Length: 232
Image (cartoon, rainbow, N blue to C red; front, side, top):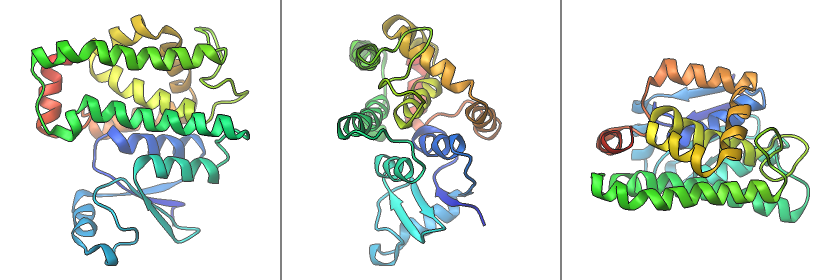
C-alpha cells in the first residue's frame, strides 16, 4: 500500500504542489483517475471521507485520515514530514506563501474559468502578475535570498515555502513563455531559487514524470486554451 492516496485531475495545477511535497520527502502515493474522482465528488457530503467540493483530496493511509483543499493538505504534510520551521512567525510566513500561491493560480485561471482570457484582459493583468512576483522577490530578499543561494524564508534547508514557490513558478514558466520572461525580469532571485529547487533529484524526477503524463497541460479546459492564446 502506498503511503498516501491522491485524488486530483490529470494536470499539474493544484495537484502538483502536493505531488512535489510527497516526492521531496520520499513518500509514495497512488493517483486516482477522473472516474474515481467523479464518483467520490458525487457522494453526499456525509458519505465522503472528508466533506469537499472539488479535488485535491489526500488520504494518509497510515492515519486513516483524509483532508481536502490544497493549503490545508500542504500544511498537514509539512507538519507530518517536518517541512515547517520551528518559530511561530516563520510558520505563519510559510502558510502565507502557500495561500498566496493559491491566490495566484486562482487569478491566473480567472477563478477557475469563470471568464476566458482576451488580449486586453491579459494586458491589464500583467502588471498585477508582476507585482505578485515582486512580492515573492521582496520576501526572499528580506530573508537573505540571492541569485546564487539562500531560501525564501532564510531557513538552513529548503522547506514547504521553497517547494511551493518552485512548483508555482516552474510549472507556469515552463508552459508560458511570457510568464517566464516576466519572472526573470521581476523576480530574478526567485527565478534562481526555482531553478535550484527543480534540480533537486526528487523534484527533477517529478517534473519529468509530469511531462510524460500531462505533456504541456497546465490547468486544462477552455481556460487553458484562452491562457495559451495570451501567455505563450
